[in-house]
Image 1: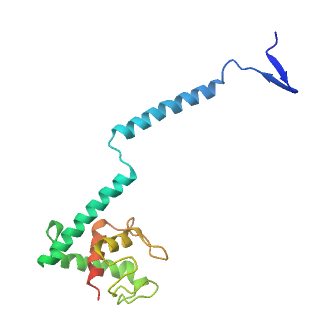
Image 2 (image 1 turned 30 degrees about the horizontal axis):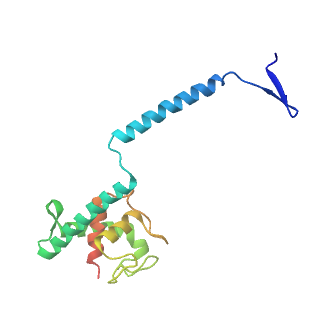
Image 3 (image 1 turned 90 degrees about the vertical axis):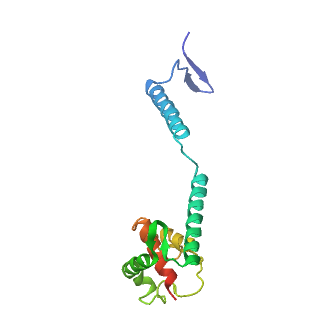
Amino acid sequence: MSEQHEYDGIKYREEKSSPGAFRILFTVLAVWGVIFMGYYLFSGWSSQSEADAAKKARDSQKQIAHKAVEATGTGYVGGGHKVETYVAVGKKLYSTLCVGCHGESAKGGVGPDLTLSKYKYGKSRLDITKTISEGRPGGMPAFSSQIKPEDVESLVEFVLTLK
């Protein structure tokens, strides 16, 4: 008996097994999938929402620490660094990174006026940190890949001194 059949004018031949290349590819993908799942399930991996919640908790602790420093008037922030040191470093960074858009006196130019009492995206430390780190639509670039987190904090301290 022939292994070829004809249905509606189409010749059909039953294969007894799939091609070897497909079986190898399927096996490799299945092994990779098991390893991938095992790695992420057992390595302490977390979802994006868990990472965002942890970041928000760290940011709120930082905000509380800064408010405590302002309330006590000691002039120190986390790790014993003086606020004045942060402001001085922030001023240097501002003159390098920000003057082109916000102007020498921070009264605006291409970018908005930084001496105002309210900003479009908020004037809290967290809001300014997010603006500097992640940027904002309409022209504010993200600087998180260009400068260290300590430098972002320095810029935030400097911006908060502007009046």
